[in-house]
Length: 573
Image (cartoon, rainbow, N blue to C red; front, side):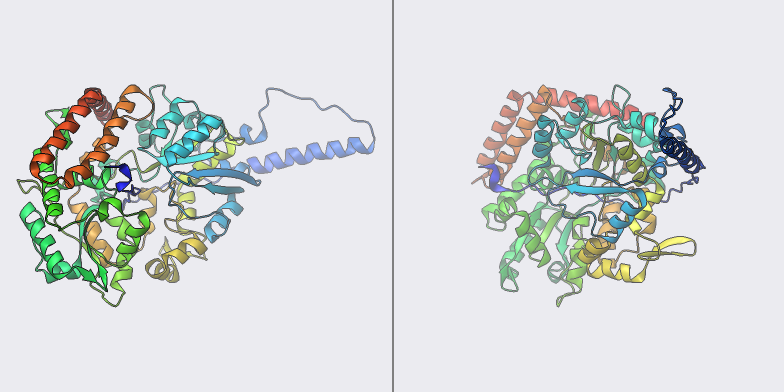
């Protein structure tokens, strides 16, 4: 069965509340002194020209430029130079549709810092796009890529991007104050350098302290249909199949369109593999050794349940073949019954459905598939990896402005500017705390597209978002969103973030081996679900395991174990 049976849906991870206060110290008199020096030199030059007798000025080759001479680790260096400069910024998400320069926030940030951003997105896969750029030798100034993407390691190991710590030492030591030692340590490579700074990065300690886990995996059902059925138990194979039978018999259409009984976000690589395994609380390790989750008996039993559902005509292949556009259309029109889906992807849809002619057609989080013991899910929380990592390429002609701009964006001042916009326009101080204006909150609930396009606030420019800072400024979520979030927080396994992203990346032999295995799994799982009987299922699965061994799966497991051991040691530091 060919791989074009499904489309990969981009992962989005969203995190939540905690307040980290940072004191920003006002810059000193460096600008005044530098300006006075330049005016003095200009005056001497004009005097010499008037006499038509140029007078050589004494030089000191050891004297650094004014902007570097007064660097202070307690002051943000971006204020030393706010002259206009263009920086290109590659965002590795082909669905990202925002621009820079039209929204109020982007204009404000450019006016303040002098930095104008030219956003670039890939037309297809981000990995392929950036790999071609590496081959050409010309990369954008700034690059944001998913922390799990193989191209990230290639950029680091191929010497295509700067070590951020080295740039900070040279141009802006204030970076170390705002980037956070924990983050820099987590991404530090064997050579001692850190090449990327993540967004949406969360530590286990932070999650334990706040109770906000940043978990976004949920099992969702359409509220009205689920409750009309009598809120059936979906946690067992029998209950799951019975509910699907009810959908087929009584709720096969909605507004003249067929209901799709089931959807899995990201299909095989995500929704039907690690996401489903998390719902089933499949362990990541046993007795200190990385566990082979794909062969777990409970996981196999549920894959066989899906095969049975397909055999009975209770599910079809639409969740394997639907394009992103089709998924969006069905979601917006409440045409799915149940979904293995991140709740954050429904944060714009649920309020819209709740405000529709059928106000109970929105989605709620409920208990979905569970293991044979009935254990609660162990959902991925936020983790130190974050979502995307941002890097500065060696193709840039302005490394000093690039690192200073990243420092500004990472600071509380930059986070506030990018998230809330301009004071007086989109937010105001209320009891000493920044707060969105009521009209902005209304737009957030009713017209998020206008909010992002015209104002560019909240999560429009998320590439450097630090939830520890920005979540203190978020308005209270509506009940139809908060129910899903609370459910995910309750079932999150806070300490399991360390297991996310253990698979090898890059061009090494073990990475190639894993790529072949995972690619083959994407082809095999649809065959398992559509197998004509259980015997054929077993044969297909056993053949996959044989091929997996031939592809050197043992080396992959060794790599995962070594990576896990390294992560544990970093967490212990």
